[in-house]
Amino acid sequence: MLSKEDQRRFEQITRQLRESDPAFFARLDSRARARRGRWLMLLTIVLWASLPAMTVLAGWLAGALCAVVLVANAAVMWRFRRRWL
Image 1: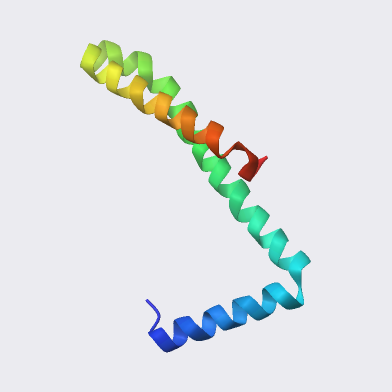
Image 2: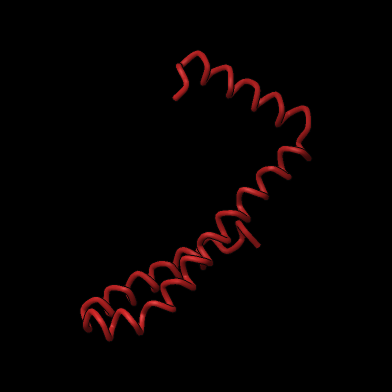
C-alpha cells in the first residue's frame, strides 16, 4: 500500500507517461485488457465443463446455480466484448 504522497507521485508519473508516450501507454493497456479476457474465457470454459458433473454429483440445485453463474458470465463477456477483442 502506498502512502498518499507516494500515490500522488505515482499518478503524476503515470499522467506524464501517458502524455509523453501515448503509444507505449496504449500498448500496456491493451495487454492488461487481453489478460482479463483470457481469465474470463478460462472461467467460462471451467464452468461449462463442470456444469454436467456438478449437476450429477451435487444435484439439480447446484447445477441450476452453476447455470445462473454461466448466464451472468456470458452477460459480462457480451457487455465488455470490445475491451479484449
